[in-house]
Amino acid sequence: MVTATALTEYLNAQRERLHQWLDRLVPSETTPPDIIHRAMRYSLFAGGKRLRPILTIATGEMFDVPESWLLPTACAIEMIHTYSLIHDDLPALDNDDWRRGRPTCHKVFGEAIALLAGDALLTLAFRTLAEIPIPDAYRDRQVRAIAEIAQAAGTTEGMIGGQVLDLLTEGKPFDETMLRTIHRAKTGALITASVRVGGILGGVGPEPMRALTRYGECLGLAFQIIDDVLDVTGTPEEIGKTPGKDAVARKATYPRLYGIEASRRQAEALIGEALEAIRSLPRSERLVALAQLVLERRG
Image 1 (spheres, rainbow, N blue to C red):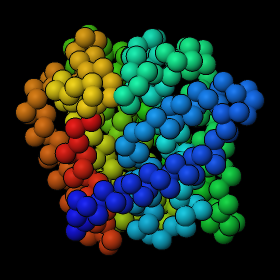
Image 2: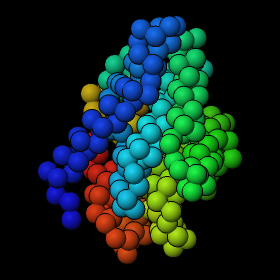
Image 3: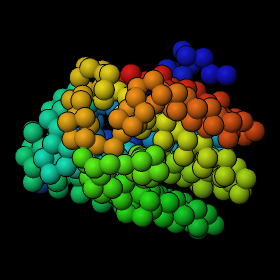
């Protein structure tokens, strides 16, 4: 069991490791053309939970994946996540002025540069993944990890596909099946991939991979349910962005379909399923603690 103090120390340590690696991987603010690199770094280093890359690190550590493989992979996932946030905030999509407690990228740098900053982070993510110095004997793991992340970020049951469905259902009737489909793709796919790539790089067999997949799927859906709830109950200070926007846009959300308390109960049940999935995996204490943290989060 990981104590609250130990978990806090672990999270802080991993965030610092990620910061150092990201700082090395992303061009400096003075590298020409400097405005695009300033915009990329503005959003990438704005803080945030770093949940996805930390899930990758925690899973990879279970299977003794070398840091030189694990940290660049985790950083690439954070780049992809940050690119998606930059684009989500643009006026054409969610039109939000605040992210992670400060003005969004397009409010600071303009819409065109924000759009390009997102594109640049996505491009850099896959360059980073391709340049990981994995020996030839394990190169298949690298290729599988790249394909896994690309699938999770893409249009077929991935993040972009989920965003499209999210847009298409605004203001329209929806049911539980559609809601789960949207959330599992929009948010759950990249969270699941963040867990799975740790196992892929570690060369795990089919049974552990099934356990990690189930854990990631349940965790990802629970994360988005809590996010839906916080959009209703949270303050700008807590969530770092404008609350209540889901209701204004009449988005497909769990609180809109079930109400606040029933949504929380569904998230709790999903976290229970996630923990059950990895119960037999060795050295899974940090994944257990991270799942519990998702359920307890307030921002």
